[in-house]
Image 1 (tube, protein in one colour):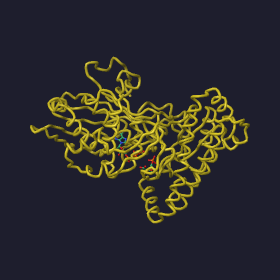
Image 2 (image 1 turned 180 degrees about the vertical axis):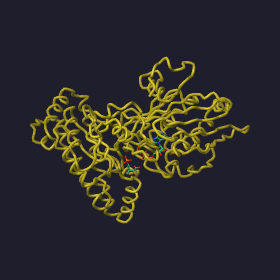
Image 3 (image 1 turned 120 degrees about the horizontal axis):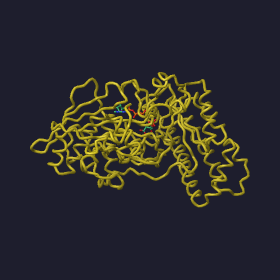
Image 4 (image 1 turned 30 degrees about the horizontal axis):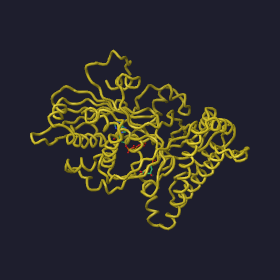
Length: 492
Ligand SMILES: Nc1ncnc2c1ncn2[C@@H]1O[C@H](COP(=O)(O)OP(=O)(O)OP(=O)(O)O)[C@@H](O)[C@H]1O
Ligand SMILES: C[C@@](O)(CCOP(=O)(O)O)CC(=O)O
């Protein structure tokens, strides 16, 4: 990396940066695909950043680069005809990027419908230089750590990596950690384009977020060739929340390469009331800290999902009973999070005192600690027992479907994490499998001890990530802020 210095930035050259977070689906995997159930998604401090500059070419060239990867430059040409029809063509390069291409094509289409055509044409003609970077935690980084002679098992190793470091891979070969790189990338690119063309000037109004959500959701579904639950895009836009999915039929009529621009823009508009997704604010209660680890084995999420859904179709009665029971326990976990946040706001000292006490004991012993009608402690005991039930039902789902959602190897590891004093929850995020695990703990000491369990674990390769829970969604980034300067520097 070249060194970042504020003076190296051309102050005359406006730079637009937008950023969106990764996600961890704590509860609601599989169920959230149905509108009937919710998913509790926690945003991460690991984020994607899209940096856009004017290319000053007058040829409508759009150059996109992901500097962390090999063969990651994609060029496009965009133009506007006399009839104001957008022309958009990829140039043939060594690789293509479906997410970037889809994002540019459709976001530019919507932007054109939303602003003065002459102004759009003039900006488009000047061309754009776009760089995309993702926090190191989105990728396993095993190659870079090994190259530097650092242990993949220690969190301190990742602290020594340069920001947005080289992955020594192409986007096709890189090992991802399950934080939702494509959703965070799509959301940051959509937001950066709206900002660059001046259709949005800030991202702090509800209607602006709704527009970014709708466009990013469509682009993401189109690029991946199917309509998923969309919780990852929703987290990239809104940060931590309880997610209730949109009706997939909203997108059905517009999932067409040749969709009419007016129809597309109307369907994705912030005031299209058919969008029935719900975002209910809920995040980690005070003092809860989330830590994550990458599991080297990896699982192919679409395969897990298709097998689970096939079983559900074949065994509707058994599946619905399981879905309903699990859905109810997921909701209880969500409710405990809300209750704890509200008790903490009302009686901070009781909350803090109880958490300090519980942090000294394994969760299995919290029930035996003196309560004297302590609401915080009661809620914590119930949270632990309800979450144990969630895991039990996921294990039941694994056994019934033959899909390793909480694989037996992970069960033992998670149980060891739960035995550490101060651990509240330990689980497999999202679709489960052999991708990642998360733990929610009450203290720095618990965090260290859990990481020690991971380091000694020999069953599979567990590599701790550095990111934390962070409730912020998509943001505009000041190019002169600390992170803005790092992004700008990496984009040259
Ligand atoms: N830094 C990046 N620059 C450009 N495109 C990227 C970048 N990171 C991811 N992508 C895009 O996202 C695609 C990966 O999407 P895919 O749906 O396979 O993963 P994902 O489910 O988002 O993965 P994970 O949750 O593990 O991060 C890549 O092929 C590429 O198109
Ligand atoms: C299985 C599923 O419900 C969650 C997948 O989550 P993740 O990508 O493993 O974090 C699929 C979906 O919601 O799109």
